[in-house]
Each structure stands twice: as C-alpha cells, then as structure tokens.
Image (cartoon, rainbow, N blue to C red; front, side, top):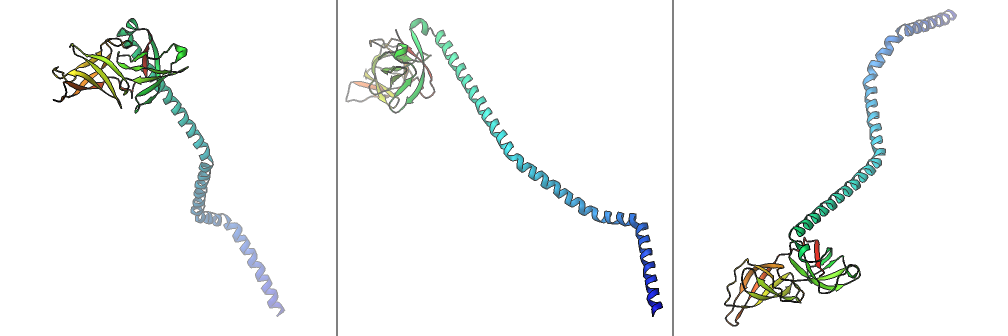
Length: 261
C-alpha cells in the first residue's frame, strides 16, 4: 500500500514536470494559435471603438460647428445687405445723371429727397426732407424723368407729407400733347385719375401723352402726367371723361425731387 502511494506521487511529479516542459516548449505556437483565433474578434471591437470615438468626437464638436455656421450666415447676410446698398446707390446715381441730362437743374431749382413710407390707399407718401431743408407747402414734386408726382401737403421738421396727383383732392389743368385740347385732371384716389371737362366733340386718341398746361399757379407747364386710357362718352352731357394711366410708379420709385423755386 505504501509502495502504491509512493509510486503514485512519483508518477504525478513526473507528469507535472513533463507538462511544464511541454508548455515551455509549445508556448510560442500556443500563443500564435490563440492570437490567430482572437484576431478577428479584436479587430471587430477595435473598429467599433474607433467608430464610437468618432461619434463622440463629432458630438462634442457639433456645438462649435453650429456656432461657426451661424457666424458664416451672419457674415453672408451682411455682405448681401452691402451689395443691395451699393446697387441702390448706383441706381440713384444713374437717375441723378439722367435728371441732369434732361436739363432739370437748368429748368428748376431742385431739392433731392428719398421716400420714407407710402400710403397707397390714401395716395400719400412721406419724404425725408422738411422745414430744415427749406420745404414749404404746395411745392411741386417730380421724379428724375420730369414726371409729376404731387405736391407738398404737410411739412415737419425733418420730413414732409406729399399728396399724390391721384389723391381725390387733387385738381389741376392739363393739356393733351400735340393738340390744343385742355382739360381738368381730377384725382380719384387709389392711384386713379381722369380728365374732365372735355367736349365730346373732341377726338381723343388712346395712349396720348398728357402734360401740365401751366395754367395753375404752382404747377409748371410741361410736366408729364400720364397717358390717355379708356374714354367715356354719353348722350346726356356735352363733355367726355378720359381715364389717365399715371406715368409714375410709386411702388418702385425712391428718389424724387422737390421744386423749390
């Protein structure tokens, strides 16, 4: 019995020595085997870790990117605003040159002004010149093409209200160009105007130019008013009424001139 136990211990010791020797001898191949088996798994987790790192990096940089984008948008809007201002200045300079070429400065003493606001329904506009600039009531207002716009209705310190020629309180004498036909221009409101007090025996051609006749105290002669449009004739009265299409466009006009002499 004792020999059996002793032999078992010796045999066990020998097996341990053999196992350790084999492990030392085969350590390299075993490690290589486990590396080859685990390499795809390691690569998978490494790639996922890189993606997560990129995700979190993008997440933390998102706020900075939004700030940069907002700054770029603000700079772009400022740039566009300056372009618009430059275009407006170019347009005003063009109109000033055309006004000079038309001889307006030779015919009238003019004060340049800009429209601040428009009341289309009531046929009024507000300009940026007033008593400090020498503006007075009843002064006539034209554009750079010598087209009549209206007259000064109310004057303030730094601004004035202009009654448009289509206002329902406006009445002034006109003449149909290249004829001896004279009439009364009568504002109807809502940017409409008609010619009144024309004998129905007079032949009025559609599209004829209408100008101021100069018979009114404050309206110089030769200012463009509009073109003749629809004609209304009846057997009940001896006169006819003619619609006028105004030449000024209050929606797009900005630069105007006040006649101060």
